[in-house]
Amino acid sequence: MQPLLNIAIRAARKAGNVAIKAYENPVSIEIDSKGDNSVVTNIDRAAEALIVETIKKAYPDHTIVAEESGIIKGKESEIQWIIDPIDGTTNFIKNIPHFAVSIAVRVKGKTEAAVVYNPITNELYTASRGHGAQLNGYRLRVNNSKDLASSMLATIFPAHNKQYSDCYFAVLQKLFTQCSHFRYTGSAALDLAFTAAGRLDGLFELGLKPWDIVAGELILREAGGVITDFAGNNNYMTSGNVIAGHPKVVKDLLVMTQDLWDERLKV
Ligand code: 2AM
Ligand code: CA
Image (spheres, rainbow, N blue to C red):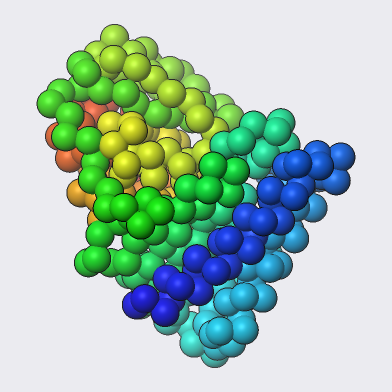
């Protein structure tokens, strides 16, 4: 699967270069609001177009699912590229250097190759299924944390799912008393990659989209981490509700939060 990964890396670097140029010249960034109460910029669109062009040049028949363009059907429907040109758009707009290009390739529903790339720090997280995860070529492992009490967790407030604020903040309050530190970084893809790198011990996030999750998921799994939905099952790609991290941390998080989640968030 190395050829797929190589194209994913090439596409991520090209998109990253577009983001860097705009980051250094913020007046070039034009902001639009999307229908779902979130924002997009001309740079998200330009970076995505470059990624699509790079994939199409190498694999004209593959199918592409991209955050800003939707589904671009190819003759080959069993190979799908899942793209988020900028994960952490709000950080990007605020000139906060914490955002990433996220690209994953799925073959018959299995993620085979993944890239999460922060162009500002030049940190390239990669994974190929069965071949481990790397950061700039160095092998990654999740932090071998002993218990929740010493762990640092990441989360994202449910800004697009405010109807779940009560149970979300009940969970946050409980975990706040049980863990050591929290971080709110503003990029789900980088939260997963940071967890793979042992910088974070785990995370819980509500209402994510597949392109926020897929690439970081493979990187995390290949680094020895696990990812589940809020019930401990595998429906996180459809629900968008994710608990992830070191296996022991995930187990603790599931046990501690089971009775707090709204039942609708557990399906
Ligand atoms: P984005 O930057 O690609 O939109 C914090 O904002 C995190 O939540 C980011 O990973 C962001 O991805 C994601 N996010 C933002 N708006 C979202 C929405 N409407 N639904 C799901 N995830 C969203
Ligand atoms: Ca995005």
